[in-house]
Amino acid sequence: MKKIWQLLIFLGIIVAAAVVYYFATHKSSEKETAIVKVEEENFEMTVTAMGELEALVSKDINIPEIMMTLPWNLRIYQLSISDLVKEGTIVKRGDYVATLSGMEIEDRLKSFADQLITFESSFENVKIDSSLVLSEARNGIRKAKDVVTDREIKLEQSIYESQAVQRQAQINLEVSERNYEQAQRNYVSLQRKHEIQVDRAKEQLDRQIKDIEILEELKKSIVIYAPSSGLVVYQRDYSGQKIKTGSYVSRWYPFIAMLPDLNTLQSVTYVKEIDIAKIKTGLPVRLKIDAFPEKEFNGEITRVANVGQELSGQFLTGFKVEIKVEPAGETLLPGMTSTNIIIVQNLKDVLTLPRNAIFSQDDIFYVYKKEGLSTIKQQVSIGGENETHVMIENGLQKGDRVLTQPPKNADVLNLINL
Image 1 (cartoon, helix red, strand yellow):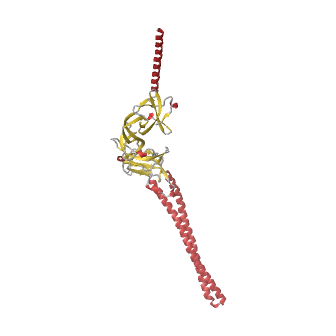
Image 2: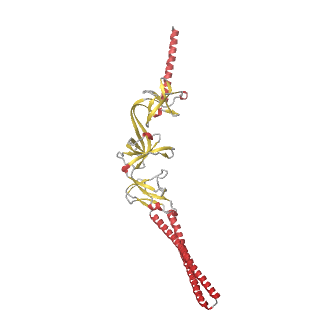
Image 3: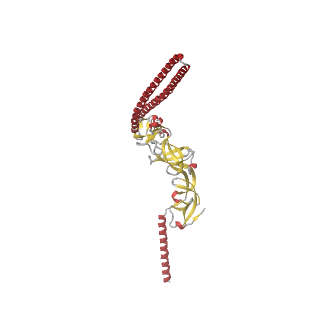
């Protein structure tokens, strides 16, 4: 009997040790892998997109108007900005804003001034040559006229000579008359030719003078002034970088800065094409503006683009969305970045899970669900999502426990399909 009791005590000790060991390891495992429960609650479906504040109405500060119509032969296609007031400067109409570099203009002026001397000399030479040539041609006409007169006299005197002599005198007169007429015709052609040469030289000279006048006018206009009162905000170039000192401006991209109407601020963002079907005008938006990290702003979608465009550096197509922003007593400025949380739909009493509890492979979503002491790999179907949670449509029930990290034996678990 004593041996039986000893055996029972020994078995009890073994069982107790096993129970203690199981619960110790079980608790350790749960600490290593967090567990969350499927909740039934109201769910806010959202789409999040980064944006930047822009003014719907603004006054552009551009390059001088003369740069938009510069003749191509001046070979000034763009100018760099040598000085620019600090962004955020409040200016009045007529206040200084920027200065464009005048080095290239000075180089062109020097080159064109040197060419002007050449054109002036060429024009004078053409006029002198024309005068000399035409004077010589007129002398030739007078000589031809004198020959005609001389032969007319000889023809009159030949009446006392033989018929042959008279005939020869007549022929000589006719030849001299033809030479005289030819000299007159040649003079008209020669005169026209030299008039064209003089006009062409004069035209080149006048064009050179006009180009120098344009360069002088451009030189005077490289200092840029504010067209109206407001807050100076830098424009962006083709690559999306802000215009600054050293940037180049041209007739193809004439913008330097702008004076926005701060009462018309909006957040401009681009929504990916996979989400754009959910977006429409009038949807409410919560905005988090980086300049005010502790505050949340309200907004509303006012416009959704019908045509998408490729997002720079992302190889994705995005649709431009404009969001009206309520300033809530803060001074909002163009260029401030914002996180736009677009509220697509509010749903009541739906099953939700934190985003980090959902896993996917080959477009199949699944969770690691606890069932008693075991863990299974359960397929689920999900609906909408927001920045923290997803909506569960099928595969789980309220109260189910789900791991937020794969268990150690995840590689050997088979997927349980819906």
